[in-house]
Length: 306
Image 1 (spheres, rainbow, N blue to C red):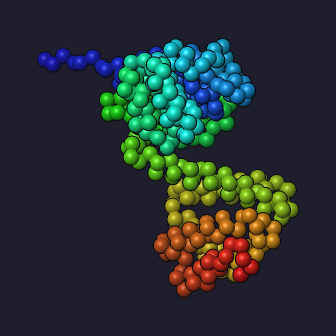
Image 2 (cartoon, helix red, strand yellow):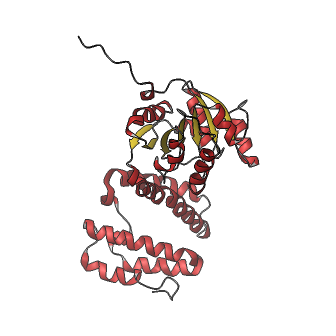
């Protein structure tokens, strides 16, 4: 009879002391969610007044200390700093001896995988990349939003189960992303989420200019339906004048944008061209209607109206 091997403790993290380096919108939220799962936040570092205030609201009674002191106190360290600052931070912490062998070091950057943590790995740390695919406000509402949120997870194979367990404990859904796919993964999220905010803000601005008193109320149902349809049906959900090949309507749009919001013309044309390409490939836009439409869209964004 085979005797079962005891589970590797790295497969499911025990109750951990948690530290946060970078009290931006993400770090304190993740630490608060880990606290709900039974882990213990013990230290946080932050510089700006906003960061200090945010940490005090989400992690009351957790001391504000230097990054090196965070690592000295915590079993699990969350590095939640801007992408461009992450490599230098990791190198600096490793070079100064702040990293302890056996310590879990997790960053939340979408751009990077686990390799950016190599300086910490050489110091004996256990590297994890845990990126929540969510937009954050830095308030308690974000803790609730983590329920069902996908996390892009990258880690050495022997730490995969531990990384996924931490995500599950935060209420998230782990999605494994290969190291070499992290930049493409992050580009996809930025394209969908960050640019969406820009598009919605521009649409509301134009509606106000057109005299609509509550553009958010007008756009809410429309955008909700469009998002739901796109997630369900992809390119089959394309509608509107570009997908129909209404070149005259698109030309009128461009004329109005040049008159009222010239800074939006280039973005409108770029998105319309992309929409036309996808509608053509899907068969929504009829080829015989595409020529006039593409003629409108091929105009100089800064030039005269078509």
